[in-house]
Image (cartoon, rainbow, N blue to C red; front, side, top):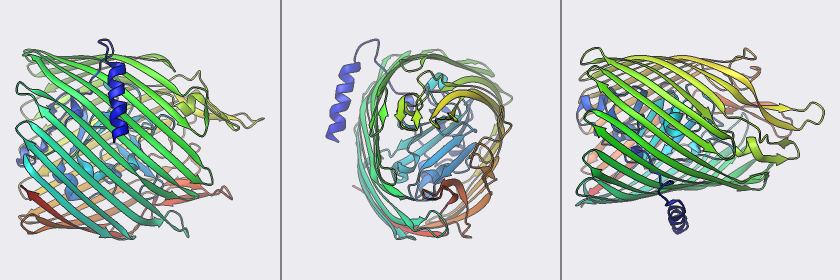
Length: 621
């Protein structure tokens, strides 16, 4: 931790000029996610969609929110368990227990979705994808999934949308917890934490460790294990006049085994922020962040890849009556290192952005504009415009248009190997998304329907010279993604029901083929029944067929799974939980691998039926 703290301080000094100061979005602090009132839980506060707080019903974006109670009830063993088959979300994994995972949001590529952790961006600058499989779910208290192009707020790669996870938040007073779990596949975990939140000062320190022998990733294969140790520190001091200063640090490290080897990994995320109320109409926020994605692989193809990203963001919120304006600037750098050769090993991005949130009685207008200037691929402007109209107190219609782009990775631009040469002349992929939706929010019930189309051009595509067999990438293809999403929920003091159904038709316009690794149809249903000290629940997930390759020669069948769960507060401060996942022991796969000896394809199998039991003790001091 000391190494990261020194680096953060160095980043702050290096970036601390008036033109370069930057702040994370207001979303770096989790809003209150209390589910005490059903109406509040069904229309929660969301901060990722517009860089500031608004309810889901007020938002002109399509949003899914999971609060702390819902996450704890679902008892996820992996972060992807929370995302699978949520509206517009496709999760693809090379097996269970910490294996390589990709998330496709509204059909955008696996590097076209932004992952934020308390406002800190997590990703590998070489591969271009976030480390979904290494994020410990036990350290997460809230999740916001914002669907739709958001490059005008978050810059590169927000083609399909933004997923933001919020870490555990200190509760009022003093307290702590200890918990232990055990179950199938020789899986065990233990976690503990302490919190302090008094007189405007808060501190949380938490840790979690999980080990598993894992499951076989292919028919007849050996079990492939997983080990993860996660730690979290959050501290904050609140100012009497509003705002505050705080730090966050999270680390996740361990080892994951796969066919042909294993990988040691370390994921770090840290931030230092200052949020101040300058006047009745002006609020300013400055944040410095640093993240690291380090992976060392052993086995058939040994390698080391290390990404270090730093950013500084200055964000100002100005109000004039009911109108709100946000202006800011952001400076970020990426540095890569590894066993492979890169023609360039660093790049810098400078951005300015603005957003207007306007209200005219029943009509709401949101307009945003951002300019990014990157020394690797040049200048790119993106924008967004959304209109909302309140039909009555419970119903709202919305219409939006936004542009986006996906930045070429270091592998795309600069990687040099005997069989591959990066293309420094690549342009970013460019997207245009239009969306229309209508929703209803009531005291104990909500529903939402959205239709969208995203046209993406200059797709970065791998090509190979037929004579030398040396590969590279070029901007040679276009894609069109059309879809519809339906979601609904019902909640009382006893029941919590949520369901969704989504259809997405993704097509490569040059070949007429379906885009690989995306299921056309997904559905999810979560049902929980509360009985005072008891609760029982179930989650059903269904996904349609997909192809694993661009040529559509490797089909993967659809599947459906059912999870059952329960909890019991058997003593004051003591809780027992039990989860039975994949009750019917379905054998299915969402990804295909290739045998290192024969180069024949094989299905990466998901885990079969598993059971996990947990005991937790909470204490208030």
